Image 1 (cartoon, chains in turn purple, green):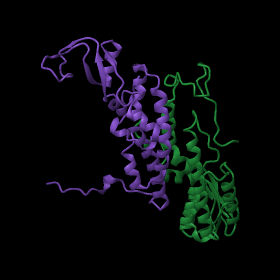
Image 2: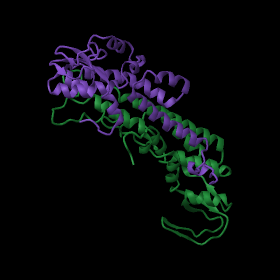
Image 3: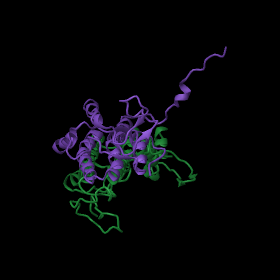
Image 4: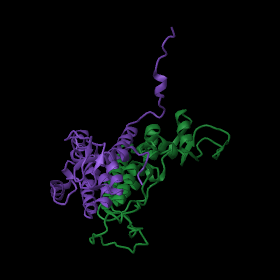
Amino acid sequence: MANYYDIDDVLAEQEFLPVLFQQGAEGVGLFDSGDDANEVEAGAKVELPFCLARDLHVRGVVAIDVPPYFRKVSRTRKEIEADAAHVDLRSRCQYFYELGLKIAPLAGDKSIGPFLLVAFQTRYKEVLVKAHTAASAVASKHLTLLTNEEVKLCEAGQSSTAAFKKWRMGAPRLQKAPVLGRKRKPIE
Amino acid sequence: MASQADAHAATFSAAELEFLAEDELIEIVPNMRMDPLNLICGDFGPFRPQIATQVPVWLAVALKRRGKCTIRPPDWMSVEKLTQVLEAERDAEKFQPLPFHYVEISRLLFDHARDDIPDIYMVRSLIEDIKDVRFHKIGTGLEIISRERTYALRLKNLSAMEANIVRPFVTRALQTFYKLSSPDMIQDSDSVSNRQPQTANRGPRRQLKDR
């Protein structure tokens, strides 16, 4: 299912989701920090990280609620329809696309998929341009709007372009290994 | 070599590409006499003064450094040929056939064989222009993949260095598009016109540049 070793996957699953507890649960009052009793009642709304929420959902203990930024009638959707390229997805959820992919089969909201696709398609064009032109001042401002995935895409393009330019300007062919640069300390 | 997190592992570094490019054959005119060289990659020589021979670029550069030969620029590196290619690049949508390692070889020759190339400034600026036009075409081509469901990209006549630059970007982009447009994500949308029967899960093959 998930990529066990992929750190981004692990971090994406850490994102919080609102869930509705179907049954009461004892000993986990931590989630519902409102009361002193060490339990959560059935019908309580709590925020859980996705990894936990998914497993409990499978067992029928909770019902996953779609997070606010994925809902059909949300500001995020409206903003993306208006101008996808400049929406600040990072402040909403750093792992926007990954989380959306995981939530979609669980939450039973079929429109998430196409919505993500459309959002990515529009933003992709912007990312493409920024990645390869690598004007660093403009790029860094834009980078703060991008989710983790898009940032990686951008960096991939930028690093290879930068490496090419450096080579073209005449990078030395033989490079001294950084280990050799350190001077030996006299042993006392 | 590659863990998924490391973007650099999948590409060659520019220096590595240059190294690979140096295996191409090029013509030199030696000014000394030497016996044939029997190397693992082939036999080169015998070298006689003023008689042109074909050697790999690395050997040519090494000899040139020691002052033992002059390098004859390859055919495609003349001003007329390059102007032709530039015109064709600007007009056509496809990429023009160019030697696979033209970027690397041209840079090597500019660095080491400056006096052997006639009109070197013209040649240099032409090659830069060709490179820019091709890059621009790559950019427009890449925009297309965001519009329809693309599983694979075909870019004919792309040179080694250009491919290396776009490689990490394109692979990641295609991966993301693939993940986002998998069938269970878009089950109900009938705006996707390329619906295939469920057994064959591949969209139609789109060729960016036709044959």
